[in-house]
Image 1 (tube, one colour):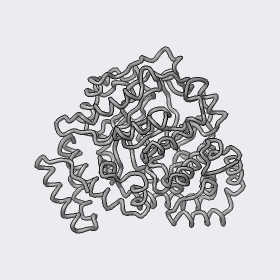
Image 2 (image 1 turned 135 degrees about the vertical axis):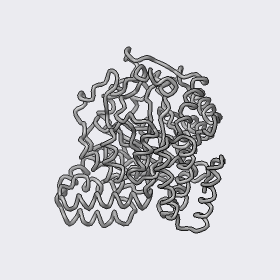
Image 3 (image 1 turned 180 degrees about the horizontal axis):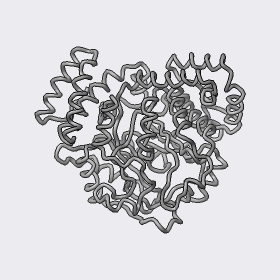
Image 4 (image 1 turned 90 degrees about the horizontal axis):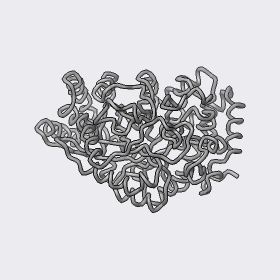
Length: 471
């Protein structure tokens, strides 16, 4: 029985409710009056229910689809402006005891080189990332209580935050590790992590159990209920995601939104981020063996409908996607992207060994500087800002600012100042020229005169060698 406030996975992600939702959406995909009504509701920027959103996803009316895309683009501008937050993944260890059939880290894969970074190797990786210009990382590690215990993760976080190299510093560490206990989430929170990220992979319980034949991750309920335990442990910024291609995308879309609704209903705060990865090639993994792959057109529609349905959430697209695919969805809802990424353990300090331990093949192989330049050429502000997290604007405090539109009064100035740091410290001459022109153009768009004057002063201070200003 579906119950959005239930703490049981199979009740807040109810299979029968999803099937009824898909049936309802299919029956109304050409119902112009209903679709118009849903679009009008979406214009209020309060979000949509999973059932309403499913109708928009299924909509076959060309004129209404144009309205959906236009609204997604406008909502993205309203909440996140033209800023794109930059980050990079950092893989600590690919030791894993799970049997996930879509991931090369699965324990029966004998081809992949197993590796776990020492603290000294982590320092080398972080210095390499700092030398690129990164300020925000997403930690990744396989599930292995012997090789990757929580103590190792905590020590690694402490190491990362401790490293100050030249003008470099990692200011926010997000963590993507396996579902764990309330006690361990409390420890992660005390370690000062940013967002706790955990992809569901698939919300279809039967498929989930087939895709995870053994290991701790095979427990569907324990995995699906992880965000509730994280919230109980004090982590109020959590990130959801599914791996599109494992199951029918309509089913995953409904489940993802039901999960967001559940977090909002129970904890008063929805997901800080939603990621939309698609399955891609990797060692021992052939995406063609999964017959639910989605086209770029469907991917684009999914991003637009998620943005409309959960207008406040950050949306992430990684270097799994090609430059072309990323260009298609940036304006429709994406607010964070990775750049210069390596998906191997130790791939930054020694990139030539990347494929030895990579989790998946990267489609966008450009350097961070190339990605930054590309974004600016399209009119976006690449942002290295971590101010909200460090100022305590997380969870419901962040969401209240975001939902009211006030977050832009902080984010736009901070984006300009962190971009200036990047330009002075790391950018190529061409990218620096592009960035300085963009900052000059965007400075006048800060509405508050006092803030505008403060930012202008700090931009000059940054040129003189000072760092880490924030509003």
